[in-house]
Each structure stands twice: as structure tokens, then as C-alpha cells.
Image (cartoon, rainbow, N blue to C red; front, top):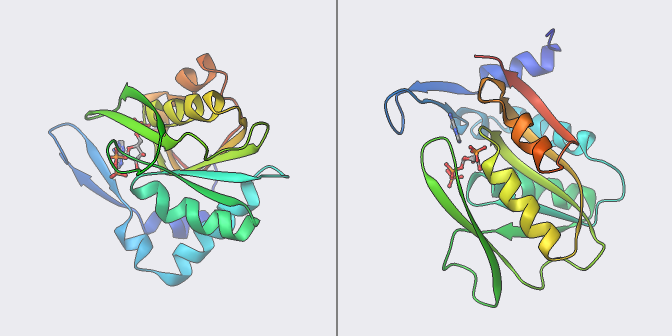
Length: 181
Ligand SMILES: O=P(O)(O)OC[C@H]1O[C@H](OP(=O)(O)OP(=O)(O)O)[C@H](O)[C@@H]1O
Ligand SMILES: Nc1ncnc2[nH]cnc12
């Protein structure tokens, strides 16, 4: 795939860290991107541009999803809904558990965080196996929200997340960068 110059600049701000957090995993480190105000702002702008119209709420998943989901929500004039690891949210929650590339996880959202019929965008840094997005999509639907789309900074396509997403009816997915291997 040919990337625009802006995407090549973005790619250069993501570092490969082999064997983190366990052997065989190449960890995509976004901290150089976060340290570049120009790169970070361009990345948020690109996520906003990739969003479907009429978004009422943006879900960002703890922790790195907060870094992109919150500024995207502000730019869209939408609510930001934190999707958190267990035991963190103070009021009634709905929860779901799933497997990801290097661990298993539970995610929770406040039971009243999404109004029935609200159009929801899921935003995260990395789409790897897709387990985190599928779990979040399930939470959105259980609360009566309409999943309008998913926007991520990068997709690890070699893990074939779109097959999992498609099996769960999540097909509107935008990735700024795609890693084929
Ligand atoms: O597509 P998946 O296989 O589900 O993986 C993607 C998720 O993994 C990372 O989060 P992690 O659980 O490492 O937590 P963190 O954001 O707190 O670092 C990343 O930020 C995504 O949320
Ligand atoms: N390889 C990876 N790098 C960064 N974050 C991830 N989340 C899941 N897999 C990841």
C-alpha cells in the first residue's frame, strides 16, 4: 500500500520493541508519537477525519485508548466514554472478558454511559487481535448504543483482526497505519 507523506511521518514516530512484554511479540511503542506535538496533533486530526458523521459518543479503552479517544471526542463535540479495567469505575457497570495478543482482560463501562440509540465511535491506538474492540462493541450494544465505527492509529494486519471483527458484525473500521508483518 502506498502511504501519504503524512502517514510515513506518523509511522516514523512509532517504535518497534522486540520481545515486549513477552518473547515473540513486537511491541508498537507510541511514546515517540506522544512526544511530538505535531505528530500527535496530526494523528488526532486524521482520526477525526476518519470518523463517520453524527457521532454522539466516543469510547476509549484504558489506558492507551484514552490518549486518542478523548481528544477525538472533544474535536467531534461528542461525549467521551472511558472503557476501563475492572474495579476502577465507581458506579454500576457492565463488564465483559476476552483474550488479547499477550494477556487476557476484562473491560467495564458505566451502565448509564451510553444513551439508547446513541451513535458510538470506538477509538484506540492498536488493533491487534481485535479482542479489545470486539469486547467494547459488545458493551456498546448491551447498553443500547449503535456502533457507528472504529478508528485506530494502527492495525497489526498480520494478526487478522478484521476477520474477528467481521464475525462480530464490526465492519466499519479505519486504521491510519497498517502493518502487514
Ligand atoms: O486487538 P487486541 O489484541 O485486543 O489488542 C489491542 C489492545 O492492546 C493494547 O492495550 P493493553 O491491553 O496492552 O493495555 P494498555 O492500553 O493499558 O497498555 C492496546 O492499547 C489495545 O487496547
Ligand atoms: N504488538 C503490540 N504493540 C502494542 N500494543 C499492542 N496491543 C496488542 N498487541 C500490541
